[in-house]
Length: 248
Image (cartoon, rainbow, N blue to C red; front, top):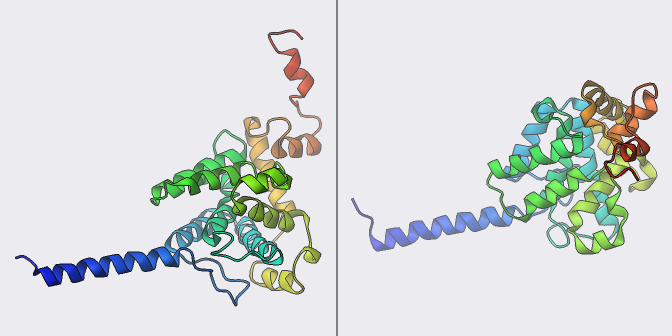
């Protein structure tokens, strides 16, 4: 049975209209009047489902708080979602930035790299193959290195990277004074800290103690282990130079 030309054109128009609506939805703010709302695009919902299933509650809450605080950071600078930054992309970075501490992504690299690799694979499995994969990987892999402080990085890279990392940093080492009045209390009511930064530190420490490859020198995991367990062997820079074949 064949469709009439009019019916075929109508069906095609409906498909195109649906695709246009879906594309537009992906760039709409989560809920401009609700400071606790998170993006609900299909991809964002899958990321939420992933962290709900795989992260312990304290890490899951930290990941969401990082996004909410990042959005406040952007607003304080006059930046608008959908105009100055992609809110969905920012949420993906924050939601997945500690997935390397979950068993599902626990490999032999430092948790930042394991998490970045898993996040990239998650995006690819969900049909994302453009530059967003690189943005998410870079932001997650380097989120403990301080890259966001570089003015050149801020000028030459996507804003979602430094905005999100700044929001995550506020949740770890900042405080209520870094946010609009009352926002921290509202966020914590819905997403309580449950041990906060110390619980995060202990999660990194447990992974690193179980597999020393995950705590190389001059990294956050390496420093946590070295400072909390100074009796354990630690690969210092001098040891690295001494083992070089150049004998400098």
